[in-house]
Amino acid sequence: MRFSVLCKICILLSHFAFSQFEYGVKGGLNFDSAGKISKLNNDVYMDGSLKSESGFNLGVYAQADLLILYLRPELQYTNVKRSFEELDFTSSRIELPISLGYKVLGPISIFAGPSIFYYVSNKTNAHSFDRIRNKFNFGHHLGLRLNLGNLSFDFRYEKGNSSIVTDQENMKNTDLRPNQVVLGMSLKLN
Image (spheres, rainbow, N blue to C red):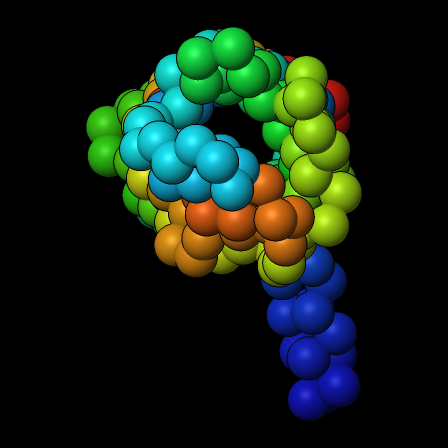
């Protein structure tokens, strides 16, 4: 009898767990305002901020609903361009934001959580940033999501916590940590 009840509970919980799981693809636009340069080379010393331009992100997500909360890890590729005077910077990175969301009202939810950034490449039209001191960066994000059936739209703010600095002599004090607003769209596949 106990075994029968235990089996029924397990079947009910597994059915509940699988019916509350979704996955899909996502993409969006990044508006990055990150970066400062304080030394360009041995002869010229300049302070300045990088001018941001829009970038894009593409990726996948999974979401597990937990009553009024949800857990949503995402894996995405992000490419962002920046400029400083004549220099153009292009950053490519893999991002892993993990969101804990709260369903506020109907299709509207708020979310926040940690983000992990892995820098694939940082290039300029003058130099390559292949030798980055720490390719990993940790940060946080928060945002608002509107869920309309199989489509959802989100608006989020992401900020990196640790600096990304190169070892190259002519770009010694370059900070490329993320500081961005992201407009995204997700398509549920299941």
